Picture 1 (cartoon, rainbow, N blue to C red):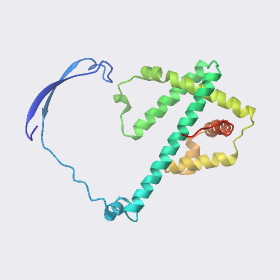
Picture 2: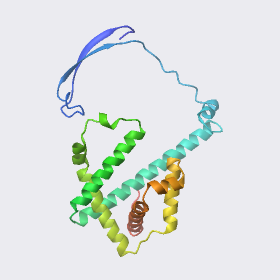
Picture 3: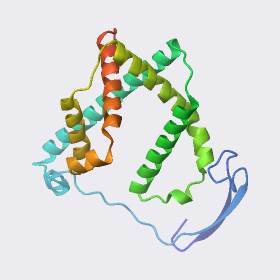
Picture 4: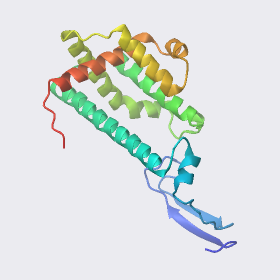
Length: 217
């Protein structure tokens, strides 16, 4: 198309689509091309690097990006390992999950999702899913998370894995730094027992990793 040109076309919307009022339908579009722009990228040099922030030169920028990507990838690998451990525990240890605990976990997961969207400037009321629909979506992962938590709690108790005051303080410091908030404010907002439970689960997983044979690929 050229600038100022108009065209009409139709698209088939998939059966599984977020907007239920459009799912499976043919939608007619009429578009007007106002203007065409070309993105002009700046030169990849030392001046460009310094304009981005506290970087000495282009080499410094590349090194810090490389370090950041490596750290992020390592975190992904560790998270995947922990997820596999939790899945294996659930697979080898069947147990009934109290419905009340599952419901509470579902509410927590929905609340966390809403808070994330709110910080991104997304109006929760505009979501295509109702709370009931979200509850159905989160039911299976919530049950899995509760099962894993109960099993990890049992391991922590059996192996006498405790959370020290220093561990709690360190975690509060990390959260405060991530959120760019005062530690006292974070302590007031996040219940200590919640942090303690998370740390205890992490200690249980670390215990399993320490006593397992892990093959790096």
